[in-house]
Length: 212
Ligand SMILES: O=C(CO)[C@H](O)[C@H](O)COP(=O)(O)O
Image (cartoon, rainbow, N blue to C red; front, side, top):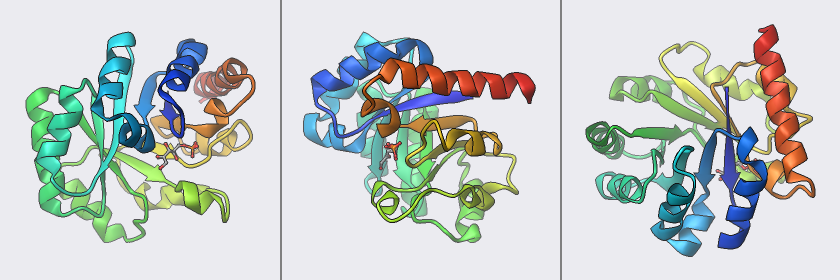
């Protein structure tokens, strides 16, 4: 099980500091949407150059112009780019095609999706990596519930990532759902002791996997 460190609402310098402080305990690095909007593709390039051995996710949250945006992310060094699940099928198919040609991947962000039919359609389109997502603004009005996993429980074809305010306290319940990737942003990046929090979360994951 991977930890994906999400870098959101941080300056360029803070992004590098957070990665350096947590590097041994994280597997994937996500350059958050807001960070990309602030600094452009150059920060994706710089992070990949500095940490070439980490899987790099560009959280592009693409919803249109899929071919162009996927190429943009991959050319900057991303291994995975994100596309919103509500996008047109053509957008999703195009990004998958670009990824396939380049040996890269697309993570489909399920933010806002509640209809099981969309999950079926995504499977038919050839999607293999999805992100369950309880959004930042939704977190202001409540906490993520593991019911979120119900959407994909009948599908063994998907590799599943999950995001949405996950912290040391909520991690054990999430682990019971055995996602492939746990996306953690503010619980690590805004912590006073980032190294300690990342180490603790990785330790909980490792302990769960040993006993699973
Ligand atoms: O995609 C995101 C926001 O749209 C975040 O990367 C994701 O929600 C993880 O951050 P946090 O743990 O702070 O919720």
